[in-house]
Length: 483
Image (tube, rainbow, N blue to C red):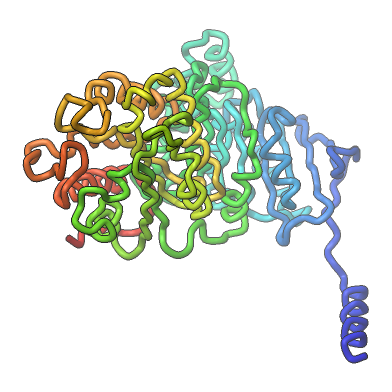
C-alpha cells in the first residue's frame, strides 16, 4: 500500500513539473527526418535551424557555415543525441571580414534571442573548415569544439586553381586586403596557435588520398600545432578516401567526444589507458618475469602513475586473419585478448604484429596482409575513446635461417612485411615506431634466443615506444622515467 502511494505521488509530481519547451524560430517550418526544421534569411544569406524534440540542457548546438545537408552523418547523430543543428550560409565567402561580421550577427541571434549555448560546435567541411577555423581564431570564446572534415587550412593552397584564386581575390578586394603569402595575416594557417593555446578541442577527419585539400598541407598543420601546445586533437584519417566522401559511417562513435566538449565536461578522467597488442615478444616470452620485465610492464614504469598499461600479447599470433601455428588458427583478431582489449576502451594503442606472419604457412596469404592489418586499426580507431594508435615495425630476428626461429623469416620481415606496414601507417597517418633496430649495438645482451628479447631487450623496446608516445601524444599528463 505504501509503495503504491509513493509511486502515485511521484507520478503526480512529474505530471505537474514544467519542462522547458524546445526553442522556436522564425521562418518556414518543415520536417527534417522527424525533427522541426526552420528556414529563414538573415542579411541576404540562407539560414536553417533543426531542433530535436528534447534538446540537451543548455541547448548545445552545432553550427555549419557551409554545405548544408551534404554528408550529414555527424549532424544526424548529434540531432539524435539532443543537439540543435544550425546553418548560416558562408560557403563562398573565404572568411572575408564582412562574412565573419555577418556570422557574428547570426551567432547573437541564436544565443541572445533563442537561448542557445554561448559556445557552439563549429562543423566545417572543406572551405567551411576554413571559416570555422577563422571563427575560432577571431572569437575563440564563442567556440566549444571544432569538427573539421578535410578542411582548407592554408588559403594559399587555392592558388593551384586559377578560378578559385580569382574568386578569393575578388571577395577580399572590398576589404582592401590583397592575399599575399607572408603579409596576409588573416590566413588560418598562420593563426592555429590561437585555438591551440585556448585548448579548443578538434575532431579532424581527413581523406588519405585527398588531392584537393591535401592532408600534409592542411590538416597536418592543425595536428602538429596542437601537439606542440599539448592541446586536445583527435585525428581520424580515412585511408581510401579522397576529398569525398565526407562524414563517417560510424558517426555515433564521435558523439561522446563532441558532447563532452560542448557540455564543458572533462575530455578525460582517471588514468590514461594504454593497450599493448602483439605476439610473444609483447607477451614477454624470453624475459625472466613477464609480469615485470615484458616491455608493457617496463613501459608502465616509464610512463608513470598517470597511465595504466595492459598487456594484450598472444604468443604465435598474427595480423593475418588466416594466420596459423602448427595448424591451429592464431589470428590476433580472433583471440579472447582482442575482445578484452576492445572492451578495455584504451586511450592509446600500440600495435606490434608481423613477425609470425613471415612464416611460410602464413605468408602465402600475403595478399591479404594489408586489409587484415587495416581491420585491426579500424577495430580500435572508432572506439568511443578515439584512441591514439602507434604502429610498430617487427623486431629483428637475429639469424637468417627460419628453421632456427620457428619458421620466422627475417628476409620476409625486412623486405616484404615492413614495407607493407609502413604503407598502412602512412595511409592512416599513424606514428611509426621502428623496433627493427631496437637492439642496435647491444645484440649480445638483448636476445634470449634468436627472436625473443632478454630483460634488457624488452627494456630497449619499451624505451623506443615511450619516446614516440612522448613525442607524438597530445595528452597533458606529465611523463616520467622511473627506472
